[in-house]
Amino acid sequence: MSDSIKKDENDVALAAEYALRLLDDEDQSILRARVLTDPDFARLVAQWQESFGGMAHAVAPVTPLPATKPALEKRLFGQTPRRTLWNFAGLWQAVSVASIAVAAFLAFTLINLAEPEPGALYVTELASENDALRVLAVYNDATKELQLSRTSGGPSSGRSLELWGIVDGENPVSIGLLPDAANGKLVLPVNLEEALDGLVLAVSDEPAGGSPNGQPTGAVLAVAEIFRI
Amino acid sequence: MARTPNDIEYLISQISLGDREAFSQLYDATSAKLLGVCLRVLNERANAEEAMQDTFIKVWKNADRYSINGLSPMTWLITIARNTAIDRLRAQKPVSDINDYSDSLASKLPSPESNVAHSSDMKRVSECLEELGDDRGAAIQGAYLDGQSYAELSELYKVPLNTMRTWLRRGLLSLRECMDR
Image (cartoon, rainbow over all chains, first blue to last red; front, side, top):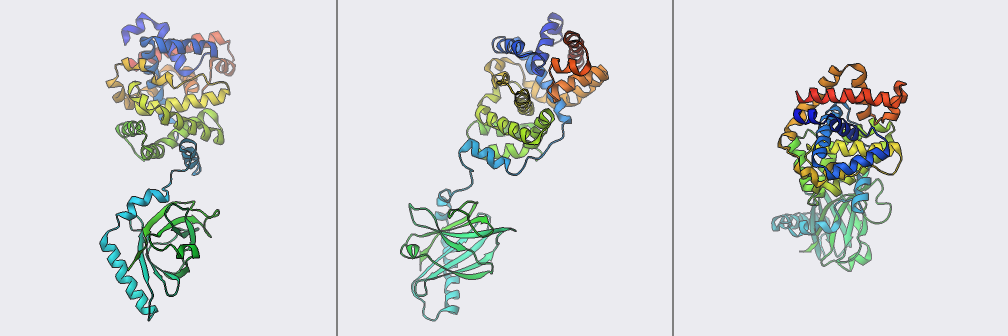
């Protein structure tokens, strides 16, 4: 390096001026052309950029506003790349037989306590990836009620958890907010009632009071297909 | 948050494959620093946030060209952020281009050592700026961190532009000499 400084101090200084953007537009674009055509000059510029970059060490980091990242991802990817319901298709298919069995057992326990003569039962367990949220859902055909039993987790502060029913190929339909209490009941909308076989349930994180637009807007925490037992 | 240059480099290489999760991680690891750099140039929060977003968009679109540009990963990111902020500051048609720091010409840069050099450069550059004396050191720092041009510096220091240029060039050559020692 010291050789090339002796050889051409002018280039070394020019490369620094270019890297710093000290010159006017015209000179700056002349040098830019040179960066693109003259490897030695490009090397000098890169060396300066590396040296000057050390100055940024002294610049205090400033945490961006929380809204900036989703805005950026929306600009780049068209939509906030939250997990969509369909990304979870693989997840719920992978739900183990064991957990279905447990859900079924719990369902009988629940139903036996509540209903002396249950109709057809449909059951599933909705569990988030890390099991932070677990909800047992049991639908009783006789009472048309969906019994929900939250065994783990709940909405974060100022948020609500919303339950959705998804018929294959159609948009999610809101069933309602998960009850605040660990155990509660919701009524299935009629169109879901008629599509119980293969019905998928999902829980999403929503603003307090639920999704403002009738479709999931927040992260989908758990998805599972409901099974007749 | 603490990431080594190797981590950052790995994330950039994943981003070049279209890995959104890596992009998200790179953002989490570096956005505060890059926003700091943009804010230093622009002095206005909303504008700086925009410049930082533009920076990450350039990163997403040009990550595949990182490996050939001869810069250490943080320098690459900081250089893009600074130039993007200066474009905004000067509110003109962008003069800087991603080519400036990622063109394949630079692939000829012999820089296995430049990646290693970065952390020592950090200390070295401030030592050398100190050695230059207050005025020159401050002027170079102003040019880099605040994005001041010769025209602005000559106004600030109340000297003719050419005088400013001669004076600062001498400082830059001394800085290079010190950095290379």
